[in-house]
Image 1: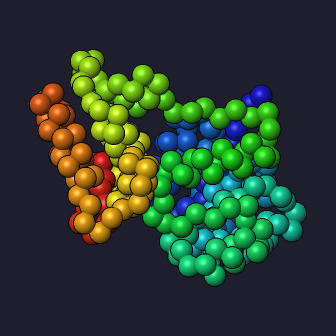
Image 2: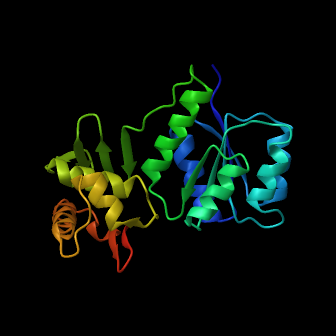
Length: 228
């Protein structure tokens, strides 16, 4: 079948471009819109397999867009909003959203939600799973669980690989400590638990020893970590 089409309606150009690049690399066909009016026109003029819709948009807000869209179309919609309150989530779902994700979100979780909706709405569609990332000579291969710097394999533990994968796969996105503890260590963040800091320090050191800039793994105080 032809490529899966995703309409991305998000006014934050950095986030819009980041998500678009990520989805294209995964094999999706992505159309970008940066305001509600152009987003609604695109949604009404053609059928998409999925729409990623920001709630707060210039010219026309996401909820109004969704209400108008649902008068004639049942294209699946995931609503994205900086407002994570329960009433905001209920508002989006009540107007026809198929799912709701609050900012800041875990990119891997968003991808899983996308795949889940596509499995329901497009049972024959098979989105590609991202298994390898290469950035400036750094390569991570998820199938083999190995890391290379300029084609030279570097020894990493399973936890260190998971940590680096989570951050590199979400480039320029601040990933919260809580999300990383769950994704990497499979446990909740404890008030005095510094184990993640220890693992990150070791990852930085190994990258630096391989002549790759480990400081690109940045600590964002009070928020989490970010790969730049």
